[in-house]
Length: 219
Image (tube, rainbow, N blue to C red):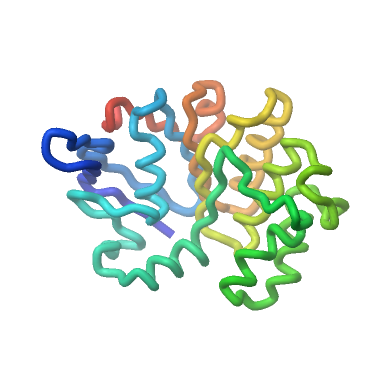
């Protein structure tokens, strides 16, 4: 899978309040890459990630998925790209406290009527080292374990790209290192493309390629 941003601009608001969150960005990433997008708060890095993940559309320029502009795809087609080819992990775990780890991983696949979803949920949790915690509730898991459940949920449908926004932001240093090591292993061993958005230079340095964003531009 390849995603290319071609002279992409993204604005919010209208008139005097119009704000350009991303300005004339060009870059490309593919399955197998491990990229960090680093910059201070408000620099536009999360907006950039949303554009890469087809969660948002550019005001100007084009986002290309395997060479085809997302502007040419229907909402359903883009939804299928996000469901089947891209996994998302955020700083907040967004786990349902009334569901077990296994149920949390299973839920989005149930909604999407994914084939073999029960086996995939189990396999995903084993892949992040939580095979013994399938029946545990979020309140019974550490912060690092909860983030691993979130990663398992993102991995369950075998995506080509895994996009993570501040994945270590809610964790202590030790658990943060474990999560980064896991993302690196997924990239190396399974060939999954990984993008990590962070404001932390130490976190960014773990990636093979670093993209620095300031005032909406790649510097």
